[in-house]
Structures are given as structure tokens and as C-alpha cells.
Length: 193
Image (tube, rainbow, N blue to C red; front, side):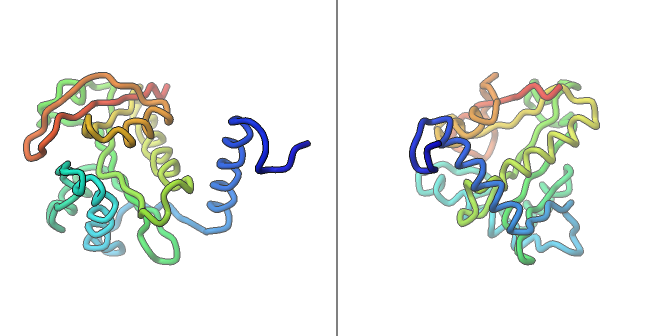
């Protein structure tokens, strides 16, 4: 057998998976439901600002790049939100939205569709499987609500994010123009049945 460090792409994927699993097992990361009395909205806002700062540098004005604590709180409490915790520090967040009746996106209004947003992982902890844990959590919730599809949107210009979601099994299903952002969004979805 070849030692790690040699071999094909499949072996490289196994190595990445093993490293992520080893990291996750040894790091004692917990995924907690957001609790306003326990988790700092300011800390989450700062995490979002930092995680999305690369997009702001590229002149993409995601809500998360500059949103206030009040906006963060409103977004956290308008769905089911989770935080990833390591050593009492919030290193990731995601919010699941079940229904979006006031939303002007027809795709999100379908009863079979749940969606997520306000998704970020601290840049120091990216590519370690934490995002996978957060997405897995919202898939679990969507399934308990008998959703067949999990969806999200991101800037059509955020090519690395789109590739990330496509690697997770999400496919492009449409476009949307949101107020307060300077780009068109790509809607991506994944069958979770």
C-alpha cells in the first residue's frame, strides 16, 4: 500500500475526509441551537463580517458583510439557527427557514422547499468539516418538516461558493434579484428525500 501523500485523487479525498474527521473528533466542537441568553449576537455578527469580508473586497455586498447586530438577531430568530462552538468560541453559524410566505422568491414559497442562509464558518476553521456539520443539521430539520428539497442562494459572481455547494450536491435551479444587494443571486437546491 502507498503511504499517504501519494496516489490518485480518490485517495486525496480520503485523506481530506480523514483529516476533517480527525479534527472534528479531537476538537470537541458542538453544534448548538442559538440561544439569545447564551450566545453573543455581536460575536455572530463579527463572524459573519469576517467570513464574508473577501466578498466585500470583491465589491459584492452580501447582507452579512455589513449587517448590524439588530439585523443579525432578526435573521437568527426568523428561523431555526445553529452555532458551532469550539472552546466557548462561536466558529460557525447557519439559519434554517421553513417557509417564506413574505419572500418574493417563488421557488422558496413551495411547501416542499426549506432553505438556509446566514451560513458562515470562521476563516481559521474553514475546510475542516464544520460547514458540513452545520448543513447536515439543517438537512435533519428539513426532513423532520417533511421537506423534499433544501435550497439556498448566493451571488452568481461568488464562483468559489457556487463550486462549494455543487460539491455538496446542490444544483442551480434559478436566479433571483434581492433588494439591498448589488448582484443577481443563483438559487441552488438539493433533493434530501
